[in-house]
Image (cartoon, rainbow, N blue to C red; front, side):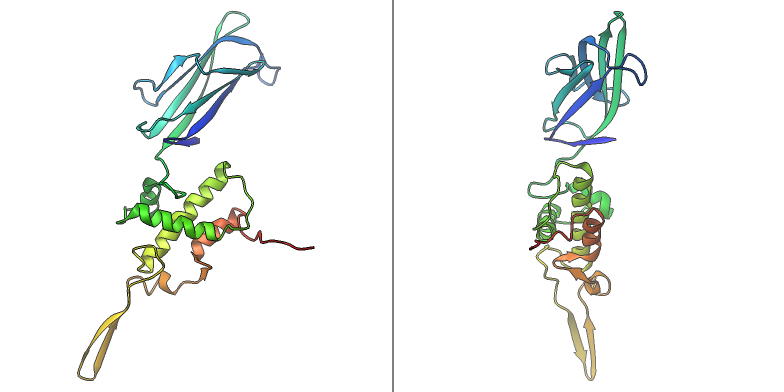
Length: 229
């Protein structure tokens, strides 16, 4: 299912054919309507305003998802009239997701879904984790509008925050709380920083925790350093 963020813009298209696998078919009176699944008031249309004829039977509409749009699933319904003067339609489902945190590759909702809870300072952690991700992509070449790339960046950012928290780095600065302890006579007790037994001992690749780096590697976003001839 296609996903668009609140505040973003998505270009929706509909193509009509004379029959399945046949040539494109001309249509007229094309309108679009966008409404939540399960009923509810339409957020767009029905309207022909903004609908663009791209080619025979092919139409597009650029939907700018306004701030305040309710997140969730929506039905996009196209209607038209074919050459036999019969009503025809096409439809698709899409998901509206929370807006990204400014300066980050993920939203607070993305992070909450990933961790199972919302950490304190979630927006700050996401911004700092995104900077760490950027540091691993300095020489990478990729399509920032590609859905798979966007998903990899989102997941790597959330995984980086998970690594930070597991290591006791609650601020995202890369510094975990110092170990504490006490001494009673000849007995000394040391208490490690939170997470020192898990991610705190896990290898990093640069500033990235390994799991975050692995997501980027799997997506083909790493290993693109400069080459000389």
